Image (cartoon, rainbow, N blue to C red):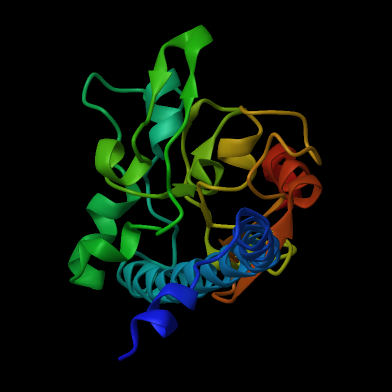
Length: 221
């Protein structure tokens, strides 16, 4: 190859490089949120599948126990001492349902990053699954009667609105993010999360809906 043609070759100028870098940065800024949403949707799909299978296990458990909900408490309740009447800690729900699921990984939500409440020393990081055995919280009041301060598991037929409450809920919605910032702000990772309804179907609730159902008195179930 002639020496002259080699000398005439040149690389990118600084301006050209800056233009290319700027274009890449713009494309990344456009595509990155899309990738995040796709990942969130994939995680949500896995979570819903887990909850459906947990719901089947819960129904099999109830079939074996006179159609009554499990006498269990979630990790938040055990930590604060709610529904713990005996010296022996109340079982976690997964401890009662694992014989029916045959797969403990169903209790792992891919979006579970744990949470902390420094004021009471609660630390469920790096995830509630790793520290407590489940990414999902249980509505303990289906089995615990706070008015009488004793266990009194409800039967499914006693629920007045079985489609408007929850039995299990993922720990990445209100439960986590209420501790990280006011509802509806960017301080939270999500304002929605998946729940298993008492009638066995899985749906998505907003923070406001969940807050209502958490406070729903036992008599209104």
